[in-house]
Image (spheres, helix red, strand yellow):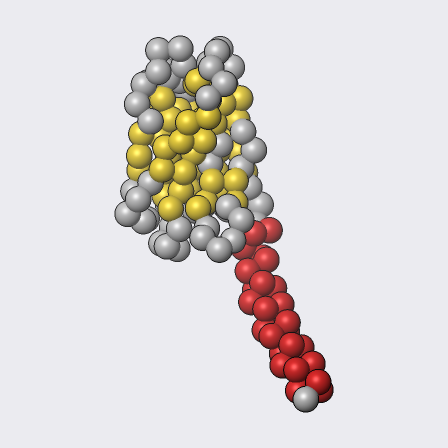
Length: 131
């Protein structure tokens, strides 16, 4: 009886390893951050899955989903002189965007993340905004 359990356990472990092994490359994709101009700070996730940009003279964050992968994109951000983390999220898949609204103090920093259920979210580093 014990050998059957051992074989069954080994098969379960092997199956789990193959599932997580297949998921690992997606988690290992590079995160990129780029910027151009004074108000176009972009934090991008997984090459082209989504991005967040500042708008309204660096007073708001817009996040957009750019791939049809079934995962929503969100941006965590902080307003200047405030320690509360805020979030703006897309829903609706590829081509959907969402805006945070405008904060008179301006945005201090923001990132972009892929919301991946059952896997750790893939996030860019925070992009600090120069004022």
